[in-house]
Amino acid sequence: QVQLVESGGGLVQAGGSLRLSCAASGSIFSVHGMGWFRQSPGKEREFVADINWKSQINYADSVKGRFTISRDHAKNMLYLQMNSLRPEDTAVYYCAVDRTQYADRPTFDYWGQGTQVTVSS
Image (cartoon, rainbow, N blue to C red; front, top):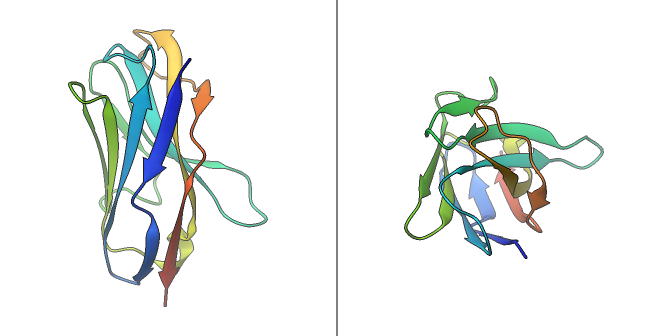
């Protein structure tokens, strides 16, 4: 049984920063890709960033240069450092894990409950 628990969301002014965390429990190891997605009201869930088993990283164009994804294998943690936040970054942010091992480009099977990020103008 895989569980993902996000934390670190909140209310921040435009230009500010937040750091999201995702605690993974169950059979999740460094060979599984992990990622962050977000969903705004009335919109579909969208990709934010992911990191594969080789620690290769991809970002959505909208967050490149502002967000940084990282993971701590020893602690089974995933992070998203968000800087220079904009009102359009307001969304529920979800952590996700690929159950397939050694995938160069992860697809995601397990999801957390999400954490709300609100950026005021």
